[in-house]
Each structure stands twice: as C-alpha cells, then as structure tokens.
Amino acid sequence: MHPSVLRALALVAALTLASALLSPVPAGASTPDVSITSLSATALAAQARMATLLPARVRAAKALGSDYTGYVTDLQTGATIWQTGYMVPMRGASTTKLATAVTALRLLGTTTRFPTRVVRGASAREVVLVAGGDPLLTSGQLGRLAHATAVALLPTLAPVPTPVPTPTPAPTPSSGPTGATGATGATGPSVPTAPPGRSGPTLPAPPTSIVVSVRLDDTLYPAPTPATGWTADYVPWVVTPVRPLVRDFRHGSDTAKDAITYFTINLAAELKALTAGRTDVVLTARYNGRMAAAAGAPEVARFAGNSCGAALARMLLVSDNDIAEMMFRNNAIAAGRAGSWAGARVTAIAELHHLGVDVTGWRLYDGSGVSRTDRVTARGLVQILRYAQLPSHPELAPLKAMLPVAGVSGTLHSRFLSKPTRCARARVFAKTGTLFDAIALAGYALGPDQRLRAFAIIDRRVNPNYSATAVRQAVEVVPATVTGCY
Image (cartoon, rainbow, N blue to C red; front, side, top):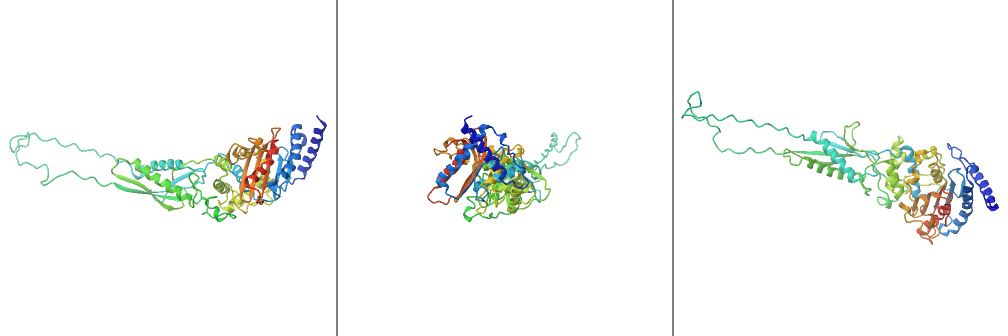
C-alpha cells in the first residue's frame, strides 16, 4: 500500500477513535462499537478522504452562509467523520418527520391498520361512523363501507315482505232449472255474488318511508386547535386542522364533516339501489351531526383500514404534513396517551430517548416540522438514522426504503441537478426540510466503498443574496461528497 495512503489511514483511525470516545452518549444508550479494526482499509481510506474534503467544500459553498449545523457519521462505529455545531438546536423543518416515523415504527410497526367502523346508534334506524385516524382513507373505500352498511341494515329496516297466498275461488255451481240450486233439487231465490253498487280495484297502500340517521364520532382526537408555532396563514393550506377522518388527502376546515357527508350520500344511494322495484318501502339516509358512539355498540360494518407502513411511506416520500400530524396523534394513542398535542409531544420525546437519541435541546410541538417553535439537532437526526440501520433495531429497518432517492423520487426527484453533485443521484436517500428560513437534508449517502453513512445538515437561510435553490444546492454538497462525487 502506498505510504501516503497508510499515513491517511493512521490519521483517520486516530481521529475516528478520539471522536467516538469524546462524543457524548445519551442516557440509556449503549456505547457504540468504536473498534477501528472493524472497518476495512477501503472504508478507512474513503472516510479519510471525506474528513479532508468536507470542511473545505462546505466553506466553499457560499450560499450556506455562516449559520448552519452539520454532522456525518459512520453507521458501523458511530464515529464522527465531520461535524459543525451538531448539538445546536435548529428548525429542522420536515426532517422532523424522521422523528414521527421512527416513533410510529417503534409503537405501531408497518402492519397496524386504522379501521373506520360503523356501529349501531340509539335506535335501529341510527348508525354512527367511528373515525379511526386513517390518513390514507379514500372515497372509494368510504363508498364500499357505505355499501356494506346498507346490506347489513336492510334485513332489519325493511325485510322483504312474505308473499300472501291468493285464496282459490270456490267452484261456481252448475246451472239448473229456474230456482234450482244443484243436485239436491232445492229451490229458492238467487243469491247475489257481489254487493249492489259500483265496484273497482283495491288501491295499494302507500310505501313506508324510513330515514336512517347517520352520526359521526370523531372523538379519537380532541377538537382541533393550532399547534404551538403554527402561523395563521398555514391553516388549512400548509397543514389542515387535525381530525381523525379525511378522504383523498383533502384540505379544508372540517375534513371529517366532508367525509361523513360523502358517506351519507353513498349510503342513501345504496339503500335506494337495494330496494329498487319495491313498492312497500322507501329508504334514505340523512346526516344528523356528531355523537360519541356508545361503549360496546354493536358493529354494523367496517373498513379494516390502510396500514401504518403505507402512511409513513407516503409521508416521507412527498413530505405530507397532514399525514404527519395524524401519525403524531396515532403514536400517542398507541402509547396509551391522549391523542392531543401534549400527549403526542411527550410520546415522541420519550420514544426517542428510549431509543438512545440525545434529545438535548429538542422541542417537538407538532409531527410535521411546520411549527416555528420546533427544534432539532443534526446529531439527533443522525442518531435516528444510525439506529434505524442497526441489527438491534429491526423494527426501524423499513425507514431507509421509505426515503426519497436523489434525482429519482419524491421530494428529491428534481434535486442533485447541479454539475458538482449530479453524480450523487441514486446514491443519496434522504428527507428534505424546507421553511422560508430553514433548509435541511438528513439521510444516508452510499460511499465509494459501497457503505452507507448517515448525515444531516440544517441551514438558516438568512442571506438575501442567494435563492432557496442556491441554498438547496449548497446543502447537497455534504451528501454528494460522502458518496465520493462532486
């Protein structure tokens, strides 16, 4: 091996060991394996080059300004490759969704579903739709639930009438001599077969009209209020008031009412279709407002719900704020707490702490990172990413596959287009974060030695001389360098 390479290996080995030993370990976390001999010569050489290039390239990226933090670590050893201000709390914007995702993976896994149910109300003619916090519920799924509800209600509300047999008329006596009545030969006056006067057909009875009362139980979450740090112009366009019922990712002040109205219209149509051709009954449905379902109310129908894994995958891929806020609440409920802002905040911080993440300086007031009051650290984000790749946490393994891929998918589809970073396309898997005064990126970069490293960089974009695009491109320098390109 060339002497210069050997010197570089020795230097990075010493720096890596010192960095790992000096890095603070959060309470409850196991001490990372800092054995340098566990890394190959190729890996050590790659990390030595990263450690040399990153500081210079970051300084050269003028659009970053001077108010940014960053961290790059080796996944195997947990050793620091590069860092600057990595413990300074910053607005991480949508990189905060990484915390929401790992909390959900720990508490709910990928297979948990969020059912939407219909139960009996106060009478046989009343049903209650119970919202289950499904962020991916569609109009088609609500329509099928309405059909199942109609089919289940029909036998009770309007059973098909039992046909009444028509009596067979008595045979007409044969004619005989005037006054004769038959074989007996008895005589007597003729008996009229119908009362005198005008006769006509009997009119059918009017159909019975039955109205099914539809009520909504959306008490899974408290009545919506803005999170701490949400500005007035965020609602409902950046983020929607958080309710446990929504269809087709719709925005609006009351997504639950929109969904229950759609369900009711479909239920009325299904009841009408099931009784088409009947003249004895007319069935319809009408929404009559919110009402908490009785405990143990008999179930009429249900949609099993979409999975937690599918919700998290979409949340991270397109950075969906509304899914994030629903999952923030669902996490709290799964932990046995109230689905409130307070319950969700406590749950998120507690789960991160139990995982081993150093949450010093962290403040999580929502699950999406939209809050102006949220704070995260580059080190904490990287720790989340590292733990998600450790064999000791198999429940977190799906996280990487859910992240957007540079130049390929989601919020990174149109990123890494500049000439210095273009070669990192398809080699970076990361969550973006964008507010008007914060641009962040956190994820994994596949190095030239085909090993993943975790990185995070958060920049407060305060320099008016650079556009948001320029800052994003400057942020991309960090993972691009880790991939070995640039």
